[in-house]
Length: 119
Image (cartoon, rainbow, N blue to C red; front, side, top):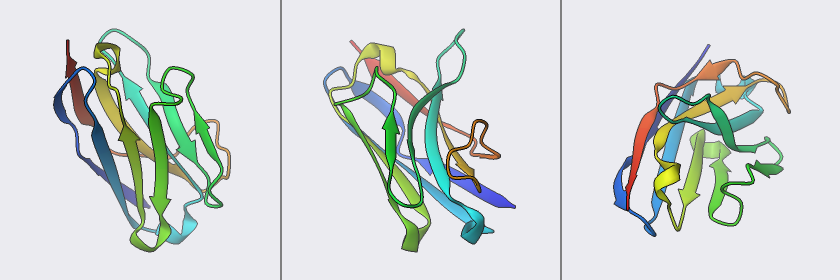
């Protein structure tokens, strides 16, 4: 089992930045892919960014160029740096992890952290 705990969310003005962190614990040696998803009110959960254990990254078109995903395997932590935030980035952001390199559905999920961007 893997436990994920996110932090770093909050209220920020449009154009501002936030850095989300997610620390994994438990059977961390089994983790390959890690990702960030978000879910806005009334919308489906969507992938924001993902990173493999080898460092291969993938971004949603809506955040590409404004966000950077990174991971520190020694600290079992994945980060999401978000810049030039927009009101449409407002959502609950979830960290996810899986033992597969490119999972279609992630097995482990955090509880989420709220990001609110004011205009």
